[in-house]
Length: 211
Image (cartoon, rainbow, N blue to C red; front, side, top):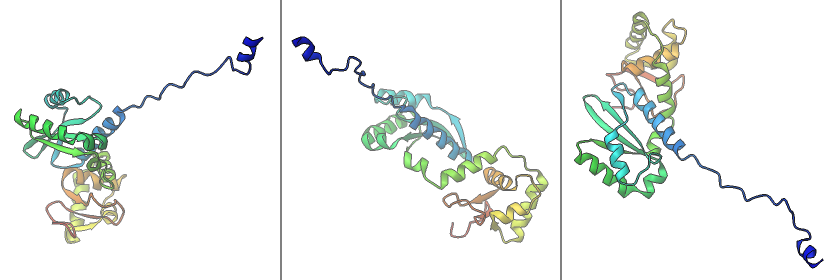
């Protein structure tokens, strides 16, 4: 009876303690890499060259895991560089290690640039870069390109996004304009919110308020 009294009121089916949720730390780095590639694709003078296995190996020797950094090789003009993109947690907690990694890579012959997550994720630049990247696959004929260029020349070298789109006969006129931005024929202020009134200009001429 005393044993039953001690067990009385206890739940024989007490649920087991919940296991801690598994956080996919790689998601942040995968998103960082994807967005970095988007920014590179949107730059008319830059190309994505793929991963940098040498710097990846150096990062491992510094104790960085594959989920800590997004490391990629790029070309800008005639130069080649390695971008070491770090999530905010890594940027603040291991800044000294990042600097040492850059120095090690430099000693190995790599030109490296340390890039914080905030620089990659910055809006509205990232959204504009996505629009430019998506427009890369749009087909724009020579006549359609000439129509936009003639419109801009007649407008003094710059016009609005809407007016440029209205200057051509194309099933996707706005994407056609962004396609020419991706080619480096036109330029647009990537730091400003993309809108119909956004200023578009010839690449070799400054936009209003820009050198």
